[in-house]
Amino acid sequence: MASVEDLTNKRFAMITFAVEVIALFLALLSGSWLFVLVCLLFALATVMLWKYGYILVPGLILRSKIVEVRDKYEIPPSQDVVLKKVGNKYYASSFLLARVNESVTDRPESAKSAMEYFEKAITSVKHVTKFSVLIYNIDLDRYVDRIKAARSKAETGKSQLAAAPQGPNQLADMARLDREIAMYTKQLERVSTGERPMSVLSYIMTTASSGNREEAMERARNQAVEMKSVIASALDVDVIPLFGEDMKKCFEWEFTLPDEREFSELKF
Image (cartoon, rainbow, N blue to C red; front, side, top):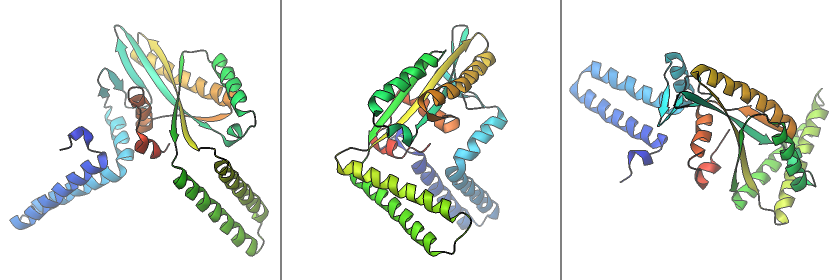
């Protein structure tokens, strides 16, 4: 029998909703409309939290000033840093996501240039920083099917656009679709030559310390802003600060990495 820890949020919500339905049925049998109304409200609340909990819960926590505690760590209502107290000192960590641009991975000297860009990045960093890279081998058949479907969609859009009356943005849209088709074709050619597609997720952690709780968090936030500018410029990548559930995922990965199914479902 699965323990509570093994249950996913979705299954837990479905079980809760099933219990509410049973309670509603029993309330109807009792003939008390007050009980029926209460059960309906709880069932509705369960569905709302299941469907929109990622939006509602952070807002509720922020407004109620609730501090989330995980073992020896704290997550403040702003949900943008992770805080830990060691002795009389506070350590606050911020996380950022680095999205590698297609232009970087397409360079012919990619292996050599990647190291050069990385060296440039780390020599530009003024604070102790942790770079983490998660790599997952993508299922080849699903990858090819997805790329073919995307290319087919782009080709259909191009045909429809060519058959339509000429508009002010038609040439620009045609050029954009041509670039998309060329990109998908290049990806398929890579696979046909034996190249294995991989999903790569890179995140950065920066930590600041202070004897004052608020000052430690503010320093971490300032370092994150500085890191965003430095890394984006040095590596030619998009860097975004992480908040809420996305930040918590990176924090959890410091202890346990996601399995293949979880990694394939990640969406930042």
